[in-house]
Image 1: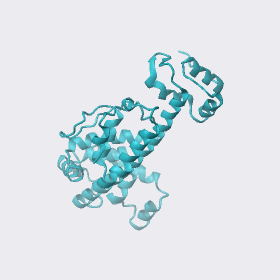
Image 2 (image 1 turned 120 degrees about the horizontal axis):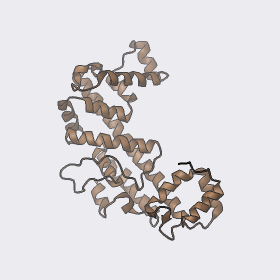
Image 3 (image 1 turned 135 degrees about the horizontal axis):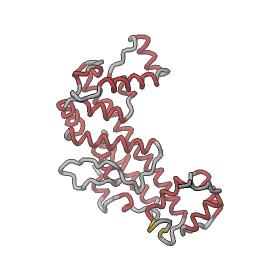
Image 4 (image 1 turned 90 degrees about the vertical axis):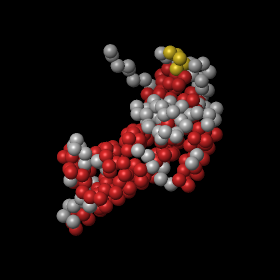
Length: 286
């Protein structure tokens, strides 16, 4: 199949009109398309598609822009929460591992599951250290400690995916100890959470769409959780609640700003597009 021809901004506006969208100010629409790739923007009117190139009538381009801006803001809110969770995870896992196996215990294959691909993982660690060779931390340890790095230093260079794999590779007893101490949950649940968190973090880091997105992984929730886990955004946010390290801050720094976002974009967004139940606030509050 032959690829489509590139379109001018004027033609892109015409395409939106053909699809049935209401455009009250063509110049403003062009200005917006100059800043946001048409292909990227197009994903935000997927919730209104009825058939191929056929959309719900009377949908204004301003509403789609509102949804786009809402997605930017909720993504920033989510990313800020993930930052706190990720730093807490690094801290607790490094502390546990260092006190049980020593500063360089992460280098020993015997401290992992039998099926752990230890050599491959160690090569990834070396790559990360090399990539950060200009940092003061690496220079300091190369100069003073002959290139030796304790777990509490090297873990700061892990990607979220590496951190997840590091936990997955630990022995069952170690995973149980960490998951129970940190989240009062099972190692199976935490494995699920880390997979979901990695995916969610990567989407935020690459400015990907969260609104009306169907996630690949379904998080495992505690047995007493009232919400049945699914692939919608709300399930991912409920997961953040379970992992958020600062209990007293969660309501003020996440739930309240989230509610304010909903009020700000009321009339443009739909909670149903993100799989939010009617009692979403009750479920999210700590």
